[in-house]
Image 1 (cartoon, helix red, strand yellow):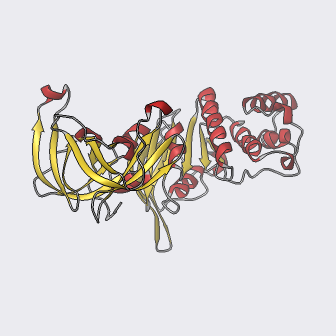
Image 2: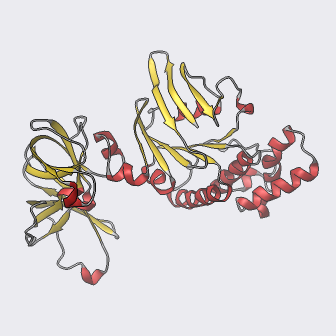
Image 3: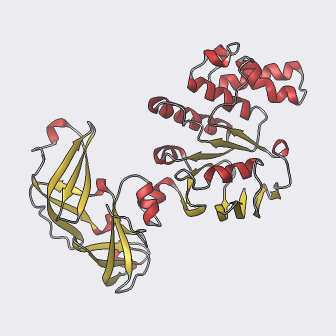
Length: 378
C-alpha cells in the first residue's frame, strides 16, 4: 500500500498534512498518536469514508480513491462493534456473504470457519446482548474478515474494553493476524498496544508523520522530542553542544559515530553518542529513558570515560511491585526519573527511600539526541 501526499482540511483545520506512507503487504502496521492527530481521518480515507483534498492511495499499485468503500479490498472494525442487535452471532458474521448472495452451503461453511478462528463457534446462536465486550469485538472482527479483504482497518478496536481484557484481546488479534496473513492497519493512542503487536509504527501529531519505524527503533531512537515523550516515559532536556569527537568505525565495529558533550542547564555536562553529525554551539535536545539510569547509594566504581555520573536526593519513590520509580532531584531545577526493575527480593540490597542521597549513572550510548525538545521540561 502506498499513501502519497495525502492532505485533508475540515474548514480551517488541517487534519492531515501531505502524509506519505508505504505499508508492506501482510504487515501489522499501527498509526499511533494522541486524540486529534489525524490517525482516524487517515484510516477513514483508506476505507473510503472520507476523500482527501490532495494525494493518492494505492492498493497493490492501483489508486482506489475513486472507488466506493464496498469496492475496495478493505474492511473496517470500529470502536463500537456496529453489530446488528436483532441478529445472532452467526447471522452477524454471515451478513456480508448474504449481501453477495452466496449459497447457503458456502455461508454455513465459511461462517463456521471464521467463528472457529475467533473462538466463538459455541456462541453462534447467541444475540449480541448475551456477549461480553471482548466477544462482541471478536464477532466484529470475524464479520470484517469473512469477505477475505486484502486489508483490515482497525479503528481503536479495544478502547471500550477494560485493561486486562484489552491485553488478552491484543494477543488474540496478533494471533489472528499471524494465521490469516493479510495487512492489518491499527489505529491507537495506546503506546503499549502499538509496541506489543506492530511490525512498524507511524507516530503522528497534528496531521504529520513524525517517525516511522519498528517498535524498537521508535522506542530506542526517537526522532523528535514529541516521539520520545509520547512513547513511554523519558527524561528530556534542552542543551547545547560544547564539543564533538568522531569515533572511527574500527573502534566500534560499525559505522562512524560521534561522541558529543552537551551543556544542560541546571544539570551540567553530559556525554552522548550519536550517528548524526552535530556541531559546536548547536541547540539540541537530549533524552535518556528512566530504565537506562542506574541508581545506587554508593558511588559507582568505574574508570570508563563514557559514563555520566550525578548525585542527588530521592524526592519521591513509587513502588509498583515489579519496579520502583524514583524521582531524583539533582538541584532546584532538574529532576531525573529512574526506573529500577525488581528481580529477586533477596538481590535488591539496601532499600533506597525518601530523602536518601543517591548516585545516578548511565552510559553515553544509552542517551539520545532528538533534535528539538519542543520546549518540554521533565
